[in-house]
Image 1 (spheres, each protein chain N blue to C red):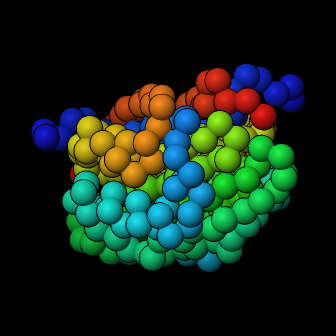
Image 2: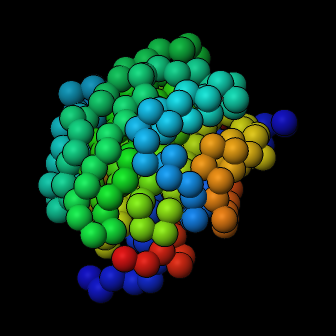
Amino acid sequence: MARKGGFGPHLIVEASGCSRRMFDPKAVRGFLERAVKRLGLTRISEPFVEYYDLGRWNKGVSGIILVSESHITIHTFMKGGWIFADVFSCKEIDQRAFEGLVKKEFRPRRMESNYLRRGKGFRR
Amino acid sequence: MARKGGFGPHLIVEASGCSRRMFDPKAVRGFLERAVKRLGLTRISEPFVEYYDLGRWNKGVSGIILVSESHITIHTFMKGGWIFADVFSCKEIDQRAFEGLVKKEFRPRRMESNYLRRGKGFRR
């Protein structure tokens, strides 16, 4: 993919009606590791993944991995089977590959994406 | 602030011409800790902060902290003194307070923000 202006893309994926796999910290950790590989990014941290239960709707798994290109994050919520996943990167990323990975791993019923360009004016 | 529809806000702050303080991992760690307090969020991880030097323009500090509301991230770049800082939260956040903190701590010459609403259809 050709590099466009500025710093790079920020891909926001929001999905709901996901499978219960999203509440398994091991599955979330695996997702982060596979996403880094699939997008050809370079990890600079271990995945950090935490299950939390703050009652009512606020229950799920949060995960993050730092890459030299910036980061990938994911937050999952029991209620409605929601997933919020982000990739922020200084190089172009394959949006469909990331969406495909979310679909394959978490089987959402609905999914929506938003692709932002960041750092207008950033020069390498 | 009144809670609006959906899951919550994602605030994106991009600044350039920042002071050299942005390359001090201790300063970045302190920034994350102060941001969590200032926004009234609840930390669920230690700040993870890493200095990296991948040559040319790709040199700086990356930091992240998980909060029960979602996360705060920051990436700084030597070239042009750029900072990319994000707050993603399931509760309303004080945009001006966060921008004020970035200004106070890193003295940017230019700053721009983008405030997105996420998780349309999310129900608590």
